[in-house]
Image (cartoon, rainbow, N blue to C red; front, side, top):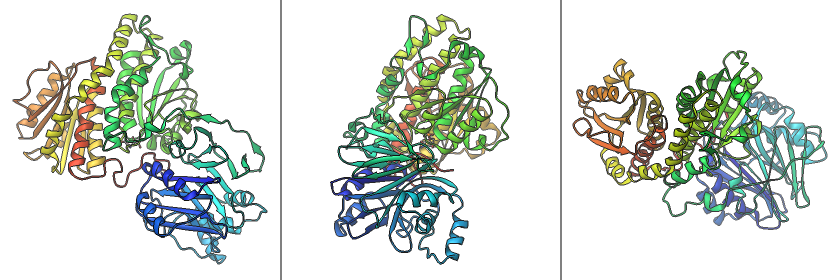
Length: 608
Ligand code: AGP
């Protein structure tokens, strides 16, 4: 949830570290800090606030040196204050460390260390590790780090420096993502590739249990017995432009507008029109494997859980396999039932969401075959799954997920088609779905043309304290997603609900002040949704209807009608979502919210 970065090389470390923090800020942004070895020791500058404020502070309080570590925080233990900001130190000020994760036995460790006379200055769990290293035996920093971590329970991606070993950074990984950046005569450590991309594309993904030692002379990866481990050097496919705003005011708007291209990228090379099926080589599922699947379990959180709900409709309809969609955070603590013949699908944009990762591990332990639908290449879920589908949607920087959602639905449609064609779905139906998938990118582009209309609409609802989103069937998850987007970035309380369920409670909320957004494209339940609109109208609710072209005029019922292009009902969520993403975006902008860095959130939830 936090972002860490480190640098060892010939250049001034501080500006490199702060630029890297800026790229990692979507991971957490309530406080930041840097530590640099200046030849006389380790100097720390940190504060509560954004990376930009830290950059300003360093103008007044410059730190010089060619090796250092830095951190941008999403607070878990201890309020986001300057004192609790990372880096953290030991009693003597020799050690400085930055950490992403949670030290679960911090309280017990702290009590023991304080009993031995250690003096703590912060409320954080992380500070215990600095004092443990201070106490640990060993001739080298890496030996002391290994000895200290033997006492630690929890998750961590951490980087440590010591005044007694200038020019060395020791890195440890357990549960939180960490990679090394291999440059020309310089080395980096970071939570993800975006922080090192402007310096190098060559990265080494560390595995759980790895300890890495970085010096000017090079790097080594060790296990907890200090045995050298060989780790592959990977090449990051992204380019810098993909993590720049590119003239847009916000990453969220840029990513919404990228969707014609990102949907095309998810489809690229995966459609076989002549056979009416999909080609998903990375999935590692043979036709026999497809036929052996007795049930599917989709594991995910947040927006990915919503695309999982759409995936259920797609896979059940196309492949005739029963699908259950589980909140990963709940699933991982349920009694594990044996899962022979089960295909477990972990859906995650970041590929690092702790709950989804652990749920996937639990399903695998219970006998399921596990695959991932993931956007971030080289992420932990992608590396641990037995196969998968990469979205190829490019880096998603805006904390509110948008392009990943539509690409997840497209990937689940491809999976449903692939499984279905191996289990009796007709070539004719397969060809029709392939044909409609090929049309999707340009239909998404047409849906984006609604933006001016949506911007005007946003002005009417920007001051609403609440909102209700209603949909049925495959568009019920779209109602949930629309509500989540509005909540996340505008802080308006919004709820998504199956339209028919409204009568069983939420209808009590409806009066002339309640905006009610209906997701109502042309499909088998359209008529039913219109009846639900009538029920809301009768109570003077303010209706916004997202429908598909050719649905006729709803102005008698709705205050506003947003028409997206028509497509197969099963694929309609890819289009009906677009105006809802834009509505949340423009309302948040009108309310002066920080769209890309909404309060209290972070892009990748790597802690429980
Ligand atoms: C969505 O806008 C949020 N950022 C959040 O709900 C997110 O979808 C959730 O944390 C899951 O993330 P993942 O897809 O990276 O696993």
